[in-house]
Image (cartoon, rainbow, N blue to C red):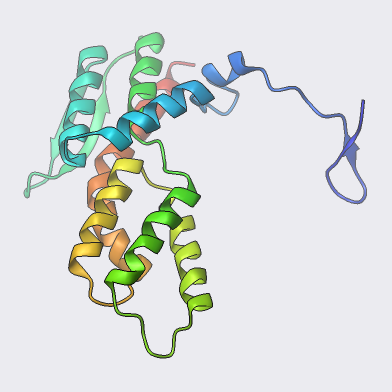
Length: 198
């Protein structure tokens, strides 16, 4: 058995990861997908033929079939918040996993490839060399890897069609956030309800 170094002063024994514990809420209330579930969800998101908005609506309907869900809209008919009035922890966890599967992200390398494929289609600034362009792509890809795969792919597609010059992260974020916000609010509402059940 080897010791795992945490810092120069402290070492601990390595802990085994039990996949069963990844399927249940942990002490801090986090529910994660197994690698198999994550890969299947990613494949579904990549192959999705519907728009991200349609997929979000489908996810909301699925959650409504599992738990009692109330949706409050603002004056512009945007979702203001989700309220869940359900104490069935098992159904709450199923609903949470459903939403979590719609939030699986693309690997950073896949995003980098998609962004690199855009380069011949856009105009690079005269003072930007390829090293700087690659660095910019890597940094944008790292930030985009925090968002659901289908939404990122749609944003890249839209930015590719609408930008004449090297896009910034802000241009991608503007295309992503409004598509992602409802999934995030639903995930947060479910997490809150699961935490209340403890």
